[in-house]
Amino acid sequence: MTARKNKWRETLPIVALALFGLVWMVPLIWTLLTAFVPTTQLLNGSPLVWLQSLHLGAFAEAWEVAPFPRFYLNTIIWVFGLLAIQLVTVSLAGFALARMDFRGKDQIFFLFLTQLMVPGTVLILPNYQTLVRLGWLDSYQGLMAPYIASAFGTFLMRQAFKQVPKELEEAARSDGANWLQVLWHVFLPVTRAPLLAFSIVSITYHWNEFLWPLLITSSVETRPLTVGLALLVQSSEIGAQWDLLGAGTLIVAVPILVLIALVQKQFTNSFLSSGIK
Image 1 (cartoon, rainbow, N blue to C red):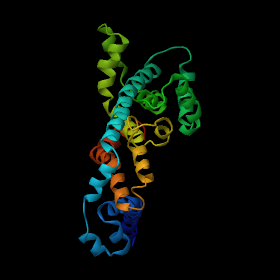
Image 2: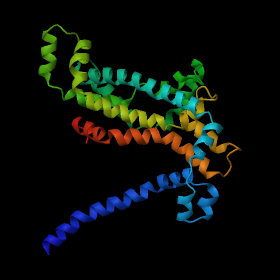
Image 3: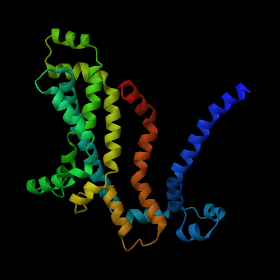
Image 4: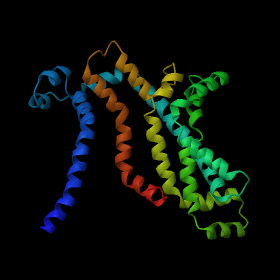
């Protein structure tokens, strides 16, 4: 009797997680169906009809309706250009807060933690007004500006740097290395896992960001994929053609889905190794 109870205790959580996963996958399954099955067959046909009418024509048509190549280029420049800047800022700030002694360090770190609790939408108006004064509307620098200093990334790197043994730093300083050389040759090589974790979070977040790009971009030359998809949905040429909408959604989402699938294990291990559980 006890063995049967223990078996149920082990099985129930797995079944519950499987059911939760199926519920979570319903939007993805529906998107796949709408992308590969014509709208008329999807709404009026049976699953057998769906299988017989699978096609890829919606992807080609959606690609022609909206300038997705340009949207992809804009997104790549925004997301990866911002990530390159963030890796510099969070590394420098995290190192300063973890290893340097200066007046007001604890107060500055508290301000970083406070920023984590402030919703990003609260800052949209002042950020927009700042960009108007700078003349950065409808520009790449305008897209990046509010996210250059990442409170989450600074906190993550501070925690990672604090776990580096002091002996490594002392050995480097005894060899005559300055603080920048210590950061580059000692701290960054042993904290690649937290840097990877932050990079994945930054890429996925900004790839899917919609509200801020919608507010400040007004031309095809700067609009990212998410705004381009919204314009595709509103296009009079699309109407209620669910297959084109599903295809457009997959065109936007597939790169991130592939990235997460490839680095899922490394992503989880990087957070565990950095002490953020």
